[in-house]
Image (tube, rainbow, N blue to C red; front, side, top):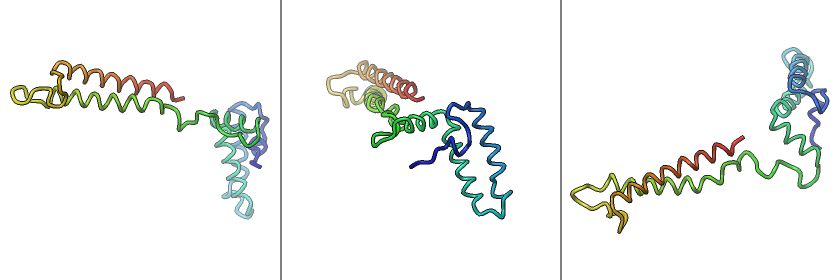
Length: 153
């Protein structure tokens, strides 16, 4: 069974952030290993207090912790969309937009005007269409980057 971080800090479950911070500071001063050199348990107590504050001092981690404590069981844990999963839906459009922009860029700027035609990379497409592909791909990259930014908390 996981430790109850509220009991470690000695605060109620409905405590405000300032109350948690004040309890943490008071306990850390009392249990600091440098101040309690003769007590072998001081280091472990200090680490427990610090771990409790790491969870309860961060609003996101505290919400996850409270949610996990409210519904114990095999399915308990973080919510379905974790921090690692946010913004993943925008990766494919961003990659496709980057490839489209590079393809259009190559058709516009890398094809010499007098030598090879602009369709040397894109058969059947002229220089103007390649430029439009470049603009559309760039716009898609910026749009997907905006989606990724919006999805983060």
